[in-house]
Amino acid sequence: MTDQPPPDFQPFGITDGFIGHNGPYFWRQNPEGGFEFGFQTDDRHGNPNGVLHGGAVLTFLDTILGHAVVHEAKRPCATVSLDSRFIATVPPGAWVGGRATMKKLTRTFAFVDAEAFCGDKLLVTATAIFRIFEQ
Image (cartoon, rainbow, N blue to C red; front, side):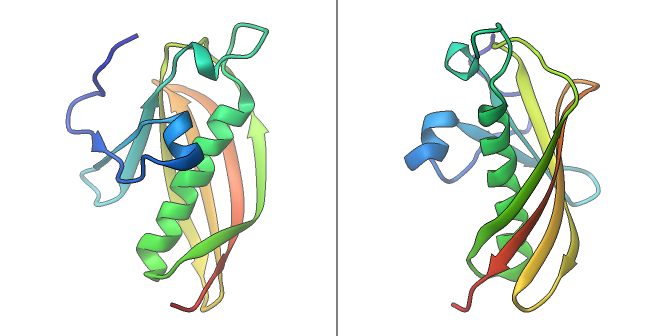
């Protein structure tokens, strides 16, 4: 485990509440203009089987999905549904990365996909619907 994120990552602005407990999270802009996120896992993210707990990864994905919506819609939002598929796992101590992709944005709803990975290993994919609120 390392105390520093990979190069070019900077701290994610939200550090309180459950996000702060599960993080800290980090982000960077990729060459295509999108965002990549990540967090350094440790023992608190593990489950009794010696691998990352699914809830730790889903909290991360829900956060970056919401970020994608707020970034595009410029308004607050809330998760309506979050469907996930667990594909692989890694032990605590791994750096977990993630990306979100906006699929469709309307005035009141956003449809977004995301994935979490460790290096080249795909860990979890998710599809979400967010309700977008008026300012």
